[in-house]
Length: 496
Ligand code: GLU
Image (cartoon, rainbow, N blue to C red; front, side, top):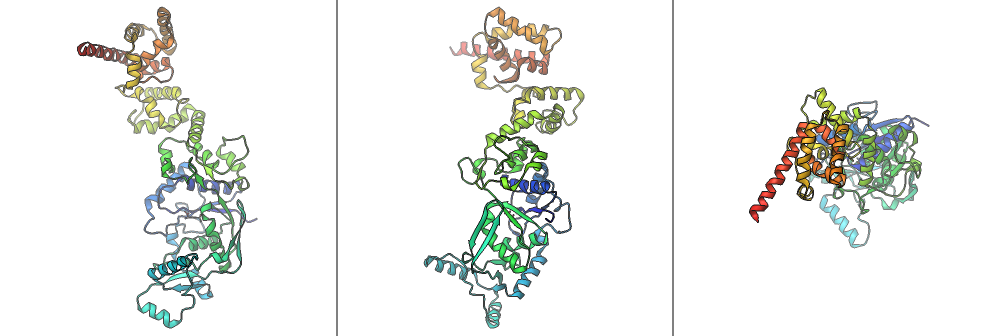
């Protein structure tokens, strides 16, 4: 077999979404598995909707996911240019070829006339297809249209006889009746090619062997095959991958929450987790394995194990998987990846000295098990870095304003100030002693301190938290909490 050449061909009209990223990933994995070539082609012929910002966002998201392309923008290659907007001459050349072969023709119908054709068809219960009225224009008719200032489109002269077989690597043999087709437009009146035409010219000239794309394009495939055949190009293998649905089983969209890869990146999803999760949207290796490194995916991926059925995007599963990958990181790696975030939240300055680095690592060590995304660290760690504690009102009224809390805090305070070596190990006995003296639950001693120093009633182990905070800050917060309790008691006396 010739070398495998696949491509991902996004239209730069928005961000890279989960569906596009999954298509890119399947192409990437297929190429790598077969030691082939992964081409990135930007389909930017829709001038009104394509933007450079979108191209940038797509390239950035691909880079974040580590889906490096072998040929394409910023890389070059032997089959460029890789932007469709820079290939217009090629589309023109092949459209002219079809014209001269009699497999295409100029159509001068106005939008109003086309509308009328559609309405008539609808009234008669037929498909709203173009009726081919410009197929056989005489020179006189053509000249008259030109004189009227009409600009033609170029239509492909479709073959309406028989059937077209799409031998799909995932969907099997799908047979389309050619009488469903019409003479579709290949070059618009502004000279731009349509998707169905440009995609064939590019896939053929770029020597694409396998077209792996979303199932929404299956119905375009017979049109494309007819163009391949008319131009004598080899038809590539097709593989149409299943759609991605939201939990309500409608097509995944913004309504379902974050769908752009950039958003997941911002929310602190690790690329490894995203790639692993995306791979499972429509593909499975066996019933048991869910965690795959990229190397393993490359080794194990095959189109034969891609499902025909739609895949459901399950955010909870992605979050779980992200947690798995976060816990797998070494402390140093976790530190490297989160430092930019801590800086962006203003928790640490641009320059981080060794003492602060040690503190950040201690924080990460106690939180690594507890977060699902890196962005969760903001909420979970703010009290380690900010001077002011943000009190959670519920926790305050439930724990701090509970009878006995002030007594516990004020008796622990001198003990904490007196601990010789202020470490996690030496703090623990202080709390146990307080518990024994009162014959209460350990939690009754711990919770008021937890709310006092973190503002909330959930945190990592209290001894860890106190040790990382340091004696001065921890004790100051206990004093602040005591003041808060006192001011409330006084307020109540006045109110009463
Ligand atoms: N630009 C098309 C899209 O984004 C490409 C489809 C294809 O892969 O043929 O849907």
